[in-house]
Length: 613
Image 1 (cartoon, rainbow, N blue to C red):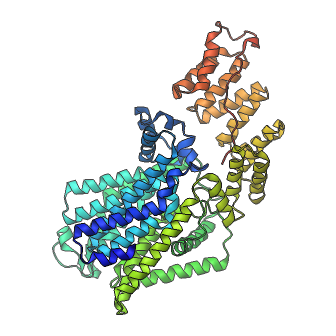
Image 2: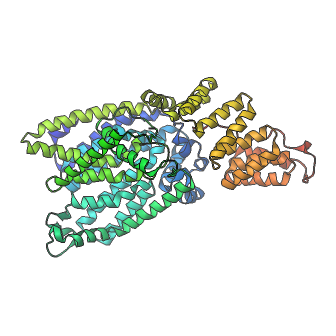
Image 3: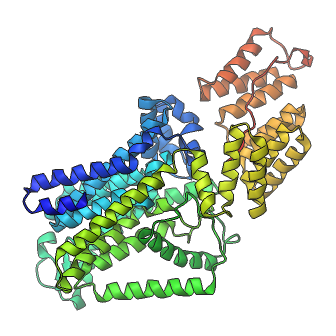
């Protein structure tokens, strides 16, 4: 399929070339991602963003728009991602096919724009088409597209490319309106996912190549209108000028960085140095760079989660440092004759910095989704570098073109199979365990899958296996407590929840489930105290207001119970459980706080204890 592109390009007009490349990108997208229309939501981050996000049920309302711009839910500030999901709910309800197809459409559009951007900047249609096809079909990008929670990746990628395209037009004719368009798309990208903070640095790389605003003699005078000719020894004013030109963009990135740091600290997802020392993080970062590089070249055994292991051996770190140093020295020495190599390498290395683990967020060592933008840099170096090598070896382009045809065909096939693992939660987690039997999160999540299939005997085994591998895994402990509740072993479950809260007093799932357990076992005084502590951490949780109302009614605090139920319905107008409980209370005659408890609410409805993934 890709070879057809090569043979036709020479005889086609520029417009026809564009259409041909777009058609090939669409065909590749259908082959790889056409299957997602039948995919389900995943019992993982999809719950955080969609299936267990109560805000989603209201759709794209004025209140939700305000919430999107003011919340740090999911330990991030990405309002545009929330707005896009709210719009999906308006269009598709809770049908997963619509959410998945939206991700595919955004990814495809980004690939087309990436082709347009680099074709305009380099005037090389063939290489730009190959770059776009790699971006579209590389297996490392499957997670970002096949997962609904990957919306933030594909959306930020779209605005990343639009920013670059706007910047290209600005460099052709520097004026305020065009610069404002660059700022606008960067700001929108930052509101999709904060990892876009590295984009201003990438624009500096593009100044060097392919825009050639800096050359071996200094600065391209046409792009900035600078008089005179600067040599390399006098280049400080040139780089300073280019940096100052992007100062507003750096300020936008700084603002987004500070917001993200605040959000992640508030959500307590940043791992402290006492847990993972700085030197261990540095070792993991160095090895991770090489793992990302290897997976880009050999994308097999890809998983949704790679457990963090601080035990990096001396040889692993040494080899990684040596290879990184050799690659960096090589691309630096070739920077004049092969500028795309240093641009591609620094694009890859630089855009990975926020996710490389120096500031460790979450339990993963690496993640496929983190390569969504960095892989473009490696692809630039590979595509332009391969054709330059053929020219130097005085061989025809046919050889390298056939190579890319075969490679892209293999990538598309591999990505098709990799995408199929995201069909449902069982297939995804089972595939992860086939890759690594010590993947404790996959064990835990498979347990949740079996629990929802009412196979708690199997689920319990997965939970205990997760704890065998990682004894302090809070999610698995809470799930074991859930199994204990089902078995009627309430005291054992209560002790487990209290143990989790001793390790992390801010674990809202453990606190919520403990409160519900205390309520069910008629420990009303302890339950009220527990719910009050929970509401101090999450006062806008409608379920908590409903549940404490049930306990307050049982302890003859009718008026306070009514107040909490009304607040629950104010937070979630369609909350049927709270509506039912409120109706039960309001139908009774007015009672004071001292009335006997025999008139307490009959058949109250409260939140069930759920397993956690």
